[in-house]
Image 1: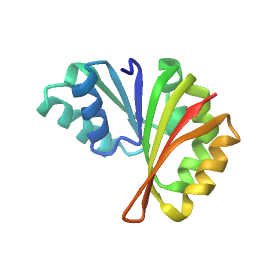
Image 2: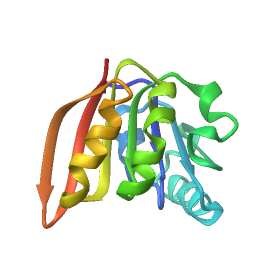
Image 3: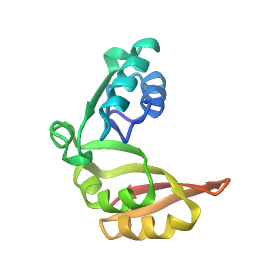
Image 4: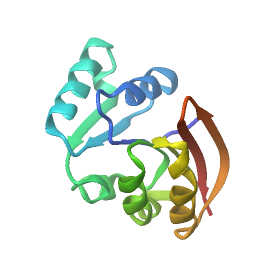
Length: 142
């Protein structure tokens, strides 16, 4: 059971909602798009997990409160490959040693590039699942 998850690139908040309902722990959610954050907060209210979910808009891991709220033991990031690569070092900076990151939203053809960029920051691959041309990577820090 994870106790301190972060949903980076939360979109509508679907991953945040699932974590809140499953583990009943506080969830931090962040998106660069203020409208996505508004929708995430609305969805949290409608799904009766408002008290567990704090959503904020900002520039990824540099968002005020994100770095201060860490370290996180789990990060979910459903984001395209290029931003995932760019954010790898910052992800390592807020994830607890031994913490897990689940990367999705990338195409199978981009998976090796994302893996290599994360390996350069201390992550190692735990699992990879491909479906219909889309790739999900589970990686661990340390």
